[in-house]
Image 1 (cartoon, rainbow, N blue to C red):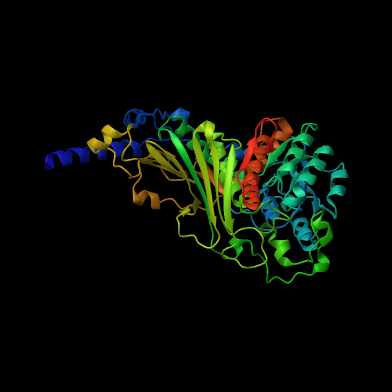
Image 2: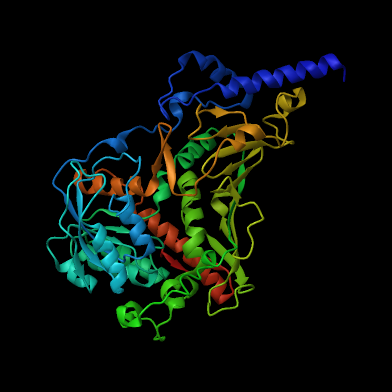
Length: 511
């Protein structure tokens, strides 16, 4: 190739990248540089898609608006670590809210129920002040309930947040619904598939607003990915890959084992419920995710996040079949759930597979890029890395991009497009290694609205509270919870029974 030809291709690619880098996503962050529509048209022609500015998910400053109506009186059942995270997201905290400026949710924490005295006292201590209320003023302290049924019987409670171990979810959700309390329930929905069916039947008889606690339903990148994939940029998609990799004691659910806890402060028999009796131990109490008596293991606690993200993008629903395997290969402690796990989920009608692999003894395989969990969406023309931001890579054998690859305008296996929320110039743009480094992920706890970082748990709870007041639909519907729980439990069942597990969509049962 002559030096002149090389330089021509270099200029073509440079102009292509420059065009991409100057395309704002209008509506996402308030940018309105309409004179750059010409670049948008050029980009669309080159990639064979129509990523027009008004087609991408909009996100505004609605979270700054105060909610209307009389204060809703909330009760929380389970005020451990996740329960306290939720309360802080709602504005109940002894800490200063810092520079967060969120709308007044018009709520008060009226009730706290926990079997551990110290946990209940922590939640009650923060109930008297809400950082987002206007004007900020002292609130009545929450009442302590020693049993959740007492809270549900109290007419002073309008809605409940359930943040207990999974083996209590089904009974509490059904009892709360029967009592007419609106429900926000943490994942995983249940411990078994049978409990999922029971909840479905119970909710059909009740008129409440239910929100499933997958707060990353508010994650902007998932909404944008859905719209990008709808434009067929990736070609025919046949494989979806998800992962969990951890390598810490806490990440393996060994929590607070050195903590001095007085068993006399814990109503251990109530915590056990109908599960088999074991003497009290911090390992079971704080690390209940390690035990099948109280949980569905890694699928229920880690894959659930990955599945829900993928389900948002593709509306996959429940797989036709699942095969799983794994074992306790590293953490030789008292756990009975695996620390290494793999599962394959088959969707023959969609002609694709979803895979999940987990390892609690290694993080070097690349799940975390800039702090964000990465899912891989594999198509015939390109593949997408999806986390808190999006990167699209063309395949060197792509038919869609063949001519542009031959011209040198597109480099195979080099980043083609990226969506990076929170950058100074928010855009769908070409990516270089330098611009990738500009983005620092903060974990799956925040998203962006008009370039500002916002707590996704706040947004998800706000959506639920607004749904209670106005009837506005919520994103964490029971249907999404049903699909998530059944899919996760199919993987657990396959592992435990060492067989392929099939789903009968008509009878709604496993085969």
